[in-house]
Amino acid sequence: MTPGLPPRRSRRTTALGVLQSRLLATSLVVALGACELSSNFDVPRKPGVPSYSADVQPIFDAKCVSCHAASVRPVPQARLALDSWEQVMRGSAYGEVVIPFDADNSLILEMTTKRVSSPHPSELEAASLSDEEIDKLRTWIEAGAPDDQGTVPFADARDLLFVCNQEDATVSIIDTERNIVIRLVDLTDYGLSSGSKPHHVAVEPDGSYWYVSLIGDNRVVKFDAEHRMVGMFVFETPGMLALDPASDWLYVGRSLSALNPPASIGKIRRTDMTGELIPIVFPRPHALTTSPDGRFVYTASLGQNQLITFDVAGDNVVFTAVDGPLRSFVQHAVSPDGALLAGTAQLTNEILFFDLTQPAQPVWSWSIAVNAAPWHPVFTRDGRFVFAGNKDANTVSRVSVANRRVEAIIVHEGIADPHGAALSPDGSTLYISNRNTSGSYVPRHDLGDNADDGTVVVIDVATGEVLKVLEVGRFTAGISARRG
Image 1 (tube, rainbow, N blue to C red):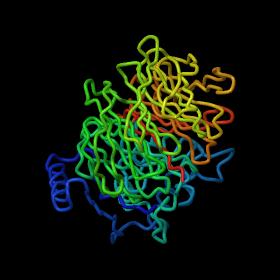
Image 2: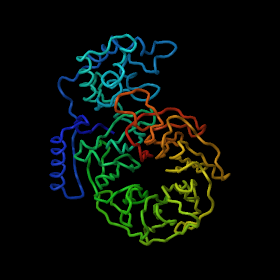
Image 3: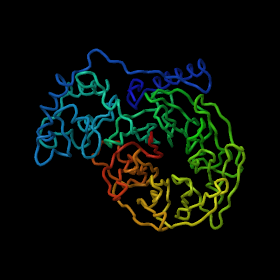
Image 4: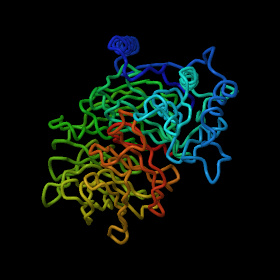
């Protein structure tokens, strides 16, 4: 992956700037066709970019390293060392301090320009950064935070997690080896609206492209590995996305927030972003996944106790009724061996398991009660466990498939209105995204505008230990990892 974000600008963009971006996007759509859009903005190496060793490191040496150096004993404050470029890019115990190309959202600048009580480190009776020093740091970060050789950090990162910040119209990209945010894609930089509401992401196994559903803009948008927008598909209130692992199809359901969406799901050809609708009759199709071989697509209704199986080869649908009270299925997951489908039921606080011996006709086998409003489930790589965040309980359940019981409930301050779930490519780490709409999680620093920012909680799959809490954007929703 190489850097390819368009030129950054403040989120407080003028109306004229937004209009110009949208006119640019519109003209490109007209030129290239309604379903494909190219936005080939490479970040140039600008003359006058501060040198790391000559301009940036002296700032840290003068103002920071008395507390933040590798030599500080027993450990540097927040385990953050700022005495070399490599240490800066490693970040702190809590996450990144620099997001390349994005000075406004880099903590190292936020702490001295936005901190409410006083600029850091003045609260320690130390000298704060001067305006000139802040300008140098800002210019350096906006240029990609390069080292002395011009190397942009994390350009070689391959194990990535994509995180939708629905109310910020941004997508955070996390390096799952380092567990830090390494890029922030602001969708308004591509002519998309500030109310685009990115909801879910799907990623090609080789990392060549990624796709994001935009509830507010009624689009599914395609980006390449350099984060250039290269295609889009118009679709009313898109929600969950599911890649067909065996063909060129991408499937898309409807958003939970859509009260009366069309009774259909989308079928998009990923190469050219053209597609069609699949009628499914029942209302509010939301949950969505595919079988491991790509032969079947499974969806379910938020408004009725029904699952639908779409046979890709036969192009037909099969209904599976589920007895009992209205459950409102949120999301599905299929076990790695394709033998079980797990569906979370938000109204009855349970996870239902369906036997897929006959994959065209799921059979409800058993269910397990969990905490309130289980949201997105995920199977471990060996299929032995299912994890799911419980949105209304601020917990994560760990369910043993073999024993058919909840074996652990994970509680942590960073788990606040949990939403999405994903595993690292090697399966050792669980990521839970948290909306924090209730405000139960209090950010570590008061920056004036971050009280309701969401989190991504990093959990050790084997032990259930919370390893790190990453603070991201507002209403952190769907997440997906590259598994190539």
